[in-house]
Length: 210
Image (tube, rainbow, N blue to C red):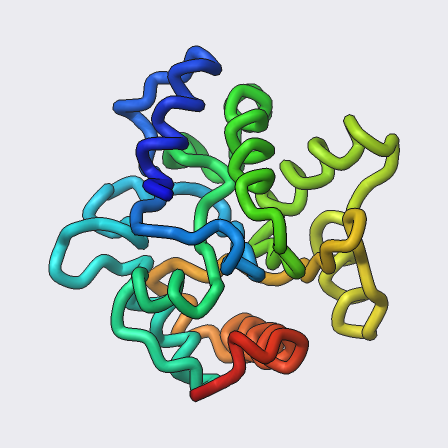
């Protein structure tokens, strides 16, 4: 499956400006994706996007660095996909302010919902930041009238205390944003993400460190 082409077509169907979106890329067998990591928003500089063709995109460098900390060896986003891990952003456009615009979140919600629906064997969704948690809860509430997990610090705290959250049969991990220039020098946030990645690899043998 060509993920970018498929999401591009879905964006056009939803009346979105597909040219303004930063979309995941790569050859994917949907049935082999078991983990979906949803970061907050696309970066302001497209050259920093996970899937950018630039030599060393910041998002990709940070993500691969986190994986390597837990022994999940990957040198490219395609290698990450091949391990059954799909990385995307809740918002396919950058934030225009400190917080995400609720109108933009609603506008792009159906695209994220369709994106999740591409993977029939999904076992775990990692919510990398509050925007991802809010948008997942918007999707889940529309279906079930309940949230998938508490947003913000409350959700992360309960997750760290081993409370399990599920959406249907899919486990939900509320965590921190996995990108940003300061992430690798913020020990607390970095260590929490690394802990969540270890838990992910323990839950899913296909993603175990190699």
